[in-house]
Amino acid sequence: MVVITLQRNKCIGCNYCVELAPGQFQMSKKDGKSVLMHSIEKKGFFTLKSHDDSIFNNAEEAKKACPVKIIEVKQR
Image (cartoon, rainbow, N blue to C red):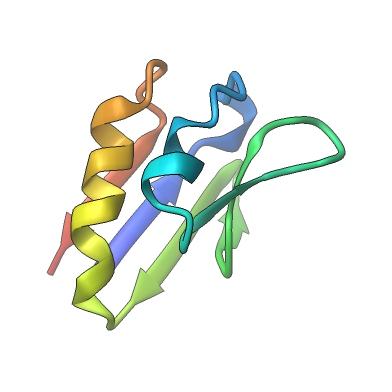
């Protein structure tokens, strides 16, 4: 299982996550910040749990590229 967490309120809209993991992230047309698709929001943290392990590498690259370090990726 792959768990991706995004702290969206700190997003600066650089778009790196979308470029590196377009299957998980997209940019909001409303505020220009990243959206973790199919995620659940709790206290400002957006979390996606997926049984598709193939998304791990792209999500990990997005995490590394994020200049404000607001993406967390874990594989269980």
